[in-house]
Image 1 (spheres, rainbow, N blue to C red):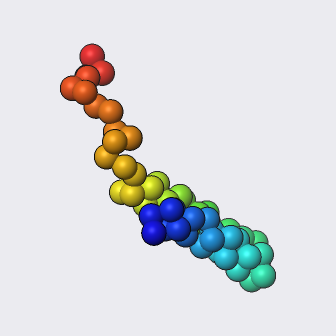
Image 2: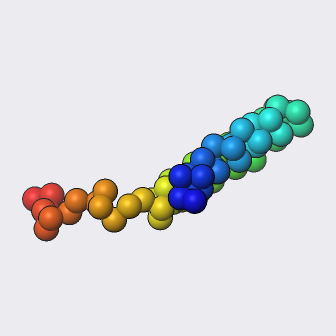
Length: 65
């Protein structure tokens, strides 16, 4: 289930790109299109950050000092 869920943002992105192409939203409302694109990137980052494995996070008590 988790592997299928990881592909969901890619499918949604493809649908949103198709919709933007058909409606020409990037031409008629350019600023809103850019804000939507920025918001979508932020949502994808949060989605993958929330769905990563705990084993992938290797902190080991290290600091950036």
